[in-house]
Length: 341
Image 1 (cartoon, rainbow, N blue to C red):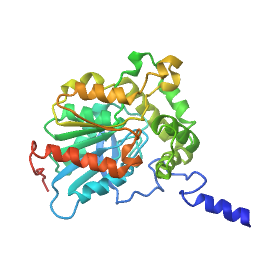
Image 2 (image 1 turned 180 degrees about the vertical axis):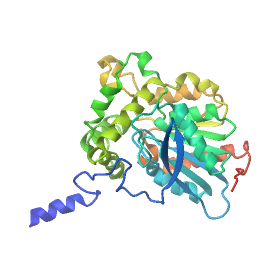
Image 3 (image 1 turned 90 degrees about the horizontal axis):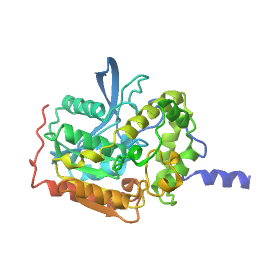
Image 4 (image 1 turned 90 degrees about the vertical axis):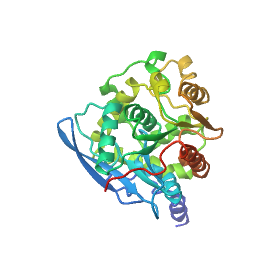
């Protein structure tokens, strides 16, 4: 009995000791707030885009659009959303098509231009004409594409450890087929996610706060929608690998802040790179500085002890830096977003 009690107590800090099983649209995993659904037609098929739309008490001072990373969801922004609401911002946080609680079409030509168009359609449906855009990881690549396509909608841009700041293919990472990406995705488990994040995201240091989000991701690979999830992830891995944004950074025309955890070593395809190349890929102390130099007028905020997800690893410090970045744009942009209702 004592051994059984000890085993049960060991499980308490986490959702469960065994992986939870979630549906292909993350059925069974609850977000902290009600989830809305935007119906759209794209590439000759009806799709549904899940999103959070949260308003502060009183009139919002602006609208912040939060764009998640490839291994993340809208809910991963939980601490940041709370801080933004407290500061008086309305928050829109979508799950992109192919991810989390949104549709996962079997056939879809994924591109950052297409995801930006889907996001623009969502904003149009809500009557939102100006947004502060915040993008993390793959969402940083999407945020850059959105700002390039829609500078008139983009009040400011904040990039949180964005990937795509180097061209992995041009640097020598071997190309792989979508079928190979898919086979790799089918091997995903909580253990493989934790191992990858420890090595690449967090410099070998795990915190209990990472557990829920890793299990959220893993649960989609153990549930009934495993193959649909793995296929969508394979298609989007191909998109990320083949559509770097680094060459277009000088074209950005909006106030931009880079928020970079220095311990991050994320590089898509690193597992197939040569040992010598692996040591050079995803070195964010250099990537952040180079991106800040390339983007006109960009501000660079460095978090020396943090990794790929500073908003999860140290939300208090990250949220303070983000709110300061948003405040810097208040004097150069209209004080109130125009919204149609």
